[in-house]
Length: 186
Ligand SMILES: Cc1cc2nc3c(=O)[nH]c(=O)nc-3n(C[C@H](O)[C@H](O)[C@H](O)COP(=O)(O)O)c2cc1C
Image 1: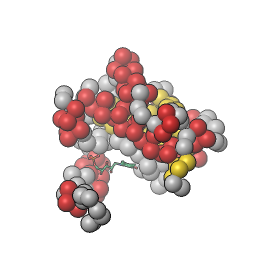
Image 2: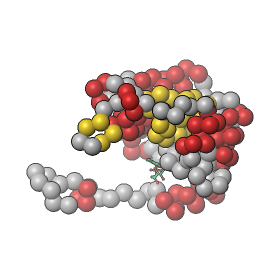
Image 3: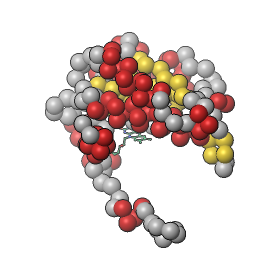
């Protein structure tokens, strides 16, 4: 696909087939994160790739901050947990750039995956403490996000459809509401 088509067609996927992701494609996805830009090129990101079924199920049923909210990740063959070491990143303008660095890398991975027909869904609704316990992640590391990766089911689940409606997933603000030229006029 053309890059613009990848960007324009991407959407969050919350129902997956159990088809495995070939290891060479998974490597390409990870490589897309590895080469991302970062503040002072510090590359503070670290990624935990979860393929083990038992651990994936633990993440699916025990990592949500509200009950089993993340159960939908259970069928995805891969879950990637995007972590960062804030001590290896930049703090400027009272902003923590580890979040920016890791988000850029992760979105590059998501778009690369989509180019290979693999869906994903950024997750913020996780309990960091529980995810750290499950994956034995040290205290000083922060978890920025996690996402299932897998091939989209042809017919999305009811949960998938309901969440898309709830989140208004297709809606985007028009350019005139988010962009101004030469001075702030928003
Ligand atoms: C930082 C971030 C956190 C998100 N957290 C969740 C989440 O916890 N659960 C979920 O189902 N979707 C989550 N989403 C997905 C959004 O709901 C989704 O991106 C938005 O509705 C737009 O839909 P689209 O991705 O299909 O274009 C998150 C997205 C982002 C960027």
